[in-house]
Image 1 (cartoon, rainbow, N blue to C red):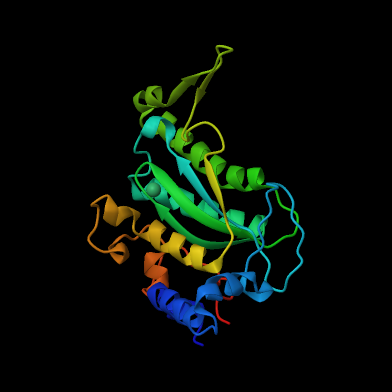
Image 2 (cartoon, helix red, strand yellow):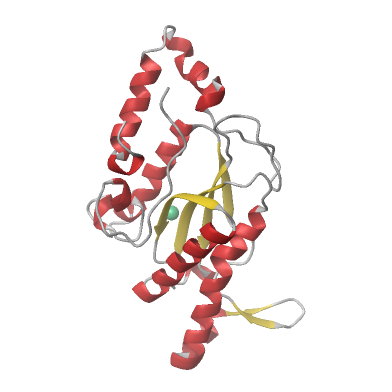
Length: 230
Ligand code: NI
C-alpha cells in the first residue's frame, strides 16, 4: 500500500467498503470487521483515561470549538495561522495525532487521536484554544480595541472577561470505527462546500482536504491514520 498521504480519502473509503464486501457472510461483514481487534479503535466512556489493550489502539475525538457568540473571528488568515500554530504545539507537547481539521469563519472541527495511554481531553482543548484566544486578545487590544466590546462576557460574579471561544468544552464525539472516522473526515472537509464558501473541498486551504488529496504545501500536515486495511 502507498503511504496514507498519497491515497485519497475516497479511495480509502472505497477500499474499506470492498474489504467489507469480501467477507464470507455479507450480512455480518461489517460487524465482524468492526469486531476484529486489529481493525478497531477502542472507545471508552471515560473522558480522562483509557487502557491500551490492542495492537492498534486509540480513542479518537472529534472536537468542535465555536467562536464567542458566533462571531466570525476566524475569517482572517492571521487568526487561522494562530490556530494552526496551536495545533502544532498541542501535537508536540501532548503527543497527539491530528487526523483532520477544518477552520471555518466561526468554528473549527478537529479530530485528535492521543498517543499516550493517559490523557485528559480538557488539557487538549485548553492547548488548542487558549493560545489563540491570548494572541487574539493581545492583537485586538493594540490594534482594534473597539472590537473587544463584542467579546465581552460578564460573569454572574460581575467579573468581565473577553472571550474568543464560546464558553465551555464544546462538542466532543468519540470515534469508534475506522469507517466512521473516514466518513467524519469527509464530512469535516465538506464544511466549506456545504456553506457555499468553495465549490470543492480541496479549494479550501484551511482544512486537511488538500493534504489527503496530495496537494502541497498545506498549512499543517496530518498524522498517519490508524490502519484501516485487513
Ligand atoms: Ni461545522
